[in-house]
Image (tube, rainbow, N blue to C red; front, side):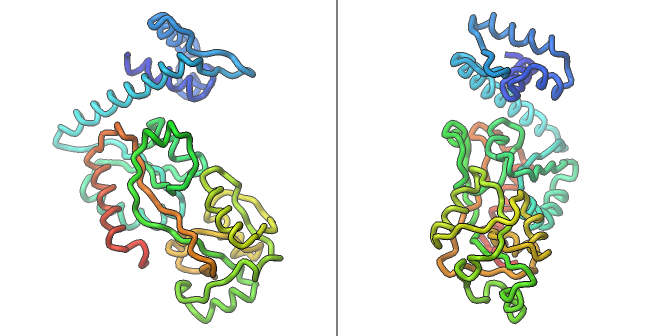
Length: 313
């Protein structure tokens, strides 16, 4: 299979639309239609069927697209290996990293990566709600940092490597106009403050995040432990936006302690029924060639994780 044709086929399958695929690839629709005809004639199959105005893969089409995806990665890996045989390593390293973790990790890791590979550009995607697992699976990211408990299709999970780093714990953020926040002023280090119960804030407004599959298990485990249903004042995605709304006095919020480690300020409290930990992992495709910059970055973050660095900031 030709690399360009593979890319076209995968984009059509991803978008479910020749029109949208052509727009994203900056090519004409007839060129994509010709690609579909090429593969259908090559393998004597029907790849797509129309359903509710969208193009869906047939059963045979699914087999072809999965094989095309694997072949696409083989060729992409080969190109990376050949490129790295040059004396000077260059190109992009694409990673998925939430805004909170970007603030926590990148100021520490970026200087070392730049010093080791000055001609490599780091491209960071912080839109975690889109599902980093799928983006890694589709080859749009080299690797990503995700929470292990996130829901995903079994077929996606089976193609990914999960390397555990460490666990984040759950905290309650209190707005500055609440007595809990004034109580926090007596102890700067949130890790030394008394644990609180959600019962203490049962009637208070909460800033909540949408119930994406990737966060539902974490939210439900905390709320069910207290038999608690938050009084939702705002539903919004985005860790820093949630923090800003809490600081504006809109309400309380649950967060992972990465927020406290990254921002180092705010009225954060541990919960009295446990830490409700979620484990952070590095993920990448099993068939992914680990380029030298990628291997260096992964080893570096693992080294800091083993030393407990991220838990002592």
